[in-house]
Image 1 (cartoon, each protein chain N blue to C red):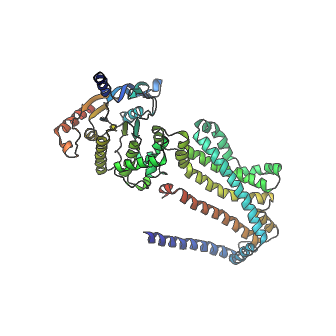
Image 2: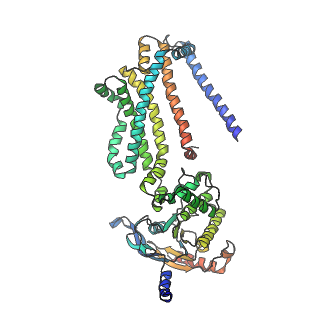
Amino acid sequence: MKTSTKSLDWGLTTQRLLAVAALLAIWQVIIWSGTLPSMTPGVAALASSIGASLASATFWSALAQTMTAAVSGWLIAVAVGTVLGLLIGSVRALDRSTSILIDFGRSFPVLALMPVVIMLLGATAQMETVVVALSCLWPVLVQTIYGARRMESAVVDTVRIFQIPALLRFRRVLLPSATPFIATGIRISASISILVAVGVEVLSQTPGIGRQITLAQQAQRWDSAFAYLFFAGLVGWSIASLLNFAEGRILKWNRQNND
Amino acid sequence: MAIQAAPEDVQVATKPLLQVQGLTMSYGFGDSENKILNDLNLDVNDGEFVSIVGPSGVGKTTLLRCLSGLIQPRSGTVSVGGEVINGPHRDLAVVFQDYSRSLMPWMTTLENVAFPLQGRGVGKKERNETAEKNLAAVGLAGQGHKYPWEMSGGMQQRVAIARALAYNAKVLLMDEPFASVDAQTRFDLEDLVIDLQATLGVTIILVTHDIDEALYLADKVIVLAEKPATVVDVIETGFGDHRDQVETKADPRFADARARILHRLRDH
């Protein structure tokens, strides 16, 4: 049983590597075909540029700036979103009265808020953090409200029959029952945080990877622009994988539903 | 003194443990009012095993929800030990039909069984001991570390029964508890419940649509029919404490009682 899953994993790894190789091959063929502008880097140029970035201090400080803004904005959103979401989702009156606000907030294009936040805070790291936090808040909030609201009716009946006190009910029933949803919100907002942080940097020239991409573009350094793009993707993907792994560990009981 | 006290004791002993008087329940109001239960009266004595049988949709679950205090009847009362209930009560525990949903998937089996005790403020050591003891009573000794989803349906229902037992209520209410397990598991669970009732002396009220199950388990079968539902018959089974899936069901009294219930249900 164990060996079979392991050999299956190997097969999957091979398949995934093949998919990446195929993508690189297609990229290279397109470059050779000459359909893209001649400045577009091929696979080899891209690889050497990625290598060069890894050795440059500018890259590492840009990465640190982007990550700091993204992660702190994301953490603020997670903290505020879960607390607020649990409160709203578990108090029916609050849930009903705030639903219009929540629906409005989640459909609001947060990037449009950026100019206003720049007016308040300037094109600074704080501004970037605030815009990231505002963008990440909604997925966490909406998912948490949904999770807290969703308690199974059989569980609600059980808790009532055994007269479980409110605090214990919150800690041992409502919270665990909402956790898979909260985890989804946290995961979605993690990808959003990188996306928005880089976007804000591109648009407002706040220091970070996004700004480096714009600078490379202006200097006609196509290879470094593509290398930075690659890193932006890599960071997003690493965070998502890390969270997936953590979720699998913490929510062992919930795996039954995903299988 | 003792002689004086005796008649009082007798009176207390004969007073039903659970009493339903004039229970009426409907959903909706005015023109859209849908009456489910009409003027039900039931007496359940201490230590008695009572089955409530009736066709699907007659209002059995509504009745059980009224008995457990989960919903308030429109009129009439449910009382336990002489006290009229107005919500869930310390002396009433419930085993739900939907065991796979009523057990918390994020808790181990032991934590599930101990949870009602935790709600009552019992310390960790004591509540785990009680939970372990009750798991053993339902044939799941040493299985407390497993999660409910690692167990079969029959085992999960045993956990739900252990949880209700651990709560140590005077009355155990069971809502179609064996409706979603296979026939053999069902027989095993029926015999388990009979054994538990004999050894622990707990009073059980079990709702089922299965006439054979109602007869096999109970001392007294209450037949519900009509719309809105009302008690159309009460049958004392008289099989005593010893029951056997083959013998008891082959007893002529079993066949007679079953025929009587079928007639009752058909006539309405």
